[in-house]
Amino acid sequence: MSSSIVEVNPNLRLLGTAHVSTKSVEAVKQQIEEFQPDVVAVELCKSRYDSLVSGRRLDKEGLLKVIKEGKAPLVLLQSLLAAEQRKLGIDEGQQPGAELLAAVNIAEDQGLEVELIDRDIQTTLRRAWKKMKFTEKVKILYSMLGEEDDEEEINLDEILEDRDILTDLMNELKQFSPGAGSVLIDERDSFLAQKILQINPEKKILVVVGAGHLNGVESYLKNSKPTESLAELEHIPKKSLLSKSIPWLIPLFVFGLFGFFVYNGSGVDLVELFTVWTLANALFAAIGCIIARGHILAVMTAALASPITSLNPTLAAGWFAGYVQLKVAEPTAEELQQFLKLESLGSFWSNKAGKVLLVTALTNLGSMLGAWVAAAGLIGGL
Image (tube, rainbow, N blue to C red; front, side, top):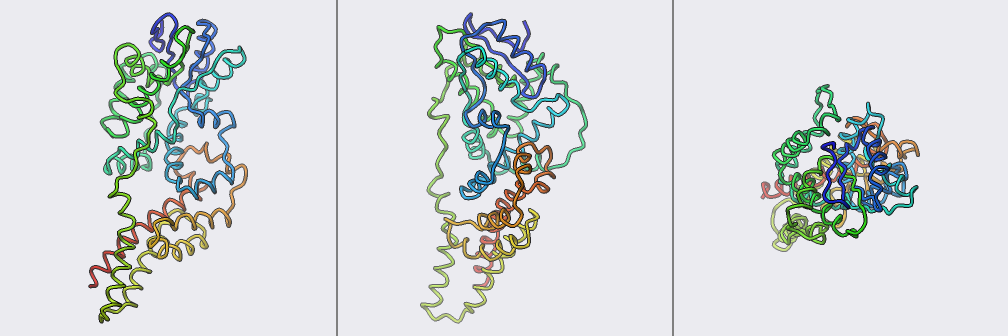
């Protein structure tokens, strides 16, 4: 039997697949015919399943919602990760997740039960980002944004046949970013295993998971007891009191400083302090928007909004700049649909939907930097 298939017991079989391999789609069909399961469990969450079924489409209402809820960085990160995976699938003729959707479709056609056993992708991304150290975040972003001329072809079939290679690849990810590795690999292995154990054991179950999770899920099912419950694995860690208070420190400092000078009738030039605050905020927010190649009106909006929004942590300059970018350079239906299929970083700047998200995220980053620079300037001017 292929090393990508694991018999846990007579009623439970695991099938490890490459999410971009044509042969994986064929393997799913073969295993359903051969194993004759009652239940087909797939490594999908509801949101990813909906995206696959709907053709991974995005609409203007969804884009606006992303801007309003401050999720632009998360959506960009998710899209960049998908683009990296999609690069492997171009020559295979398959989009990532094709074999999972095939498993669902075949199961439904045959009247079999379908179980979606993966953790919600947004929860996974938020937990990964939360657990990563600052240096890890920088390394991850640099790696994804860096232009590499590595043309070496990857033989997916060879990787699938050698689970030791898969283990090495997973270990490399953990070494590169222990925080991200623990969430993307170990936590999901545990989550998948616990969801499998919740399915009626009297029924024959075929589980279709990415080959990278095969070793971990098998280990949890056969040997290990999860250290965290499903509720704990689905929990998004809340910000500490310190991290919650940090966004308010700068506005409190600025208002306190101005109030102190006015109350004491200090000879400090208040106009000069106001100018330092305004220029630093406006300049850095505008630079962020320019890097995102935002429309001139979006750049102006970023510059005008940042000095105000930096004094109100419930608002963000990027929201306003992104909204203006969306209105003045509205993506077409085709561009919205193509956004989730982009294959390189450069495409995010040329695609109007991607540009809206970049304007939102980079303007916010610039505004944040501007606020800290302005605060440092005010302290230095005392």
